[in-house]
Image 1 (cartoon, rainbow, N blue to C red):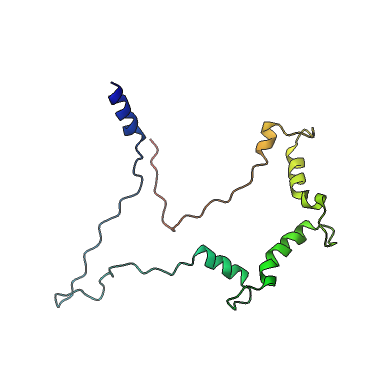
Image 2: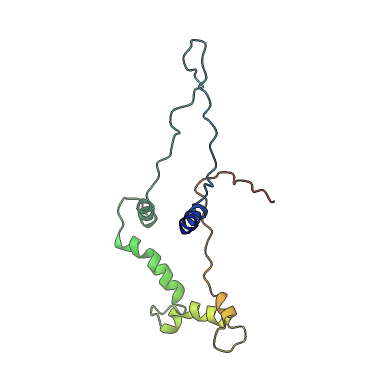
Amino acid sequence: MLLLGVAGIFFFRAPASSAPSLPAAPAAVVGSDGGEGEDALPDEAPSATAKTREQKRFDRYDKDRDDSVTREEYLVSRRKAFAKLDTNSDGRLTFEEWVVKTSTKFAGADNDKSGALTRAEFVTTAPKRKAKKPACACKPAETSED
């Protein structure tokens, strides 16, 4: 019985294959000369050259497109972030300026103005995540409601 119980656990925990099955490849078009016609499909689908994550990151920093990132180009994003935090534009970042976003978020979540967040209030401070884009522009599979 123990062996049957363990086998049942493995059987029910096995992941189900949710990948859609692909249709069969169409037959090649046969021309009048018995060979493949001009409309025959290639053996491989053409693909665009995919840039790596690091190539894309490099391109974002290389503003003048000279295939080198200068110190100034490298620091542009940091300067913009610093300028957003330096609310009085004095070139110095105080602790209060540095924590303004967090303090604002806390104050907005503290609905009862008690100076402490309850569990329900704390939940509202969770970062908003962007939805991941699908890997392809495929039509989503339709689901049937039973």
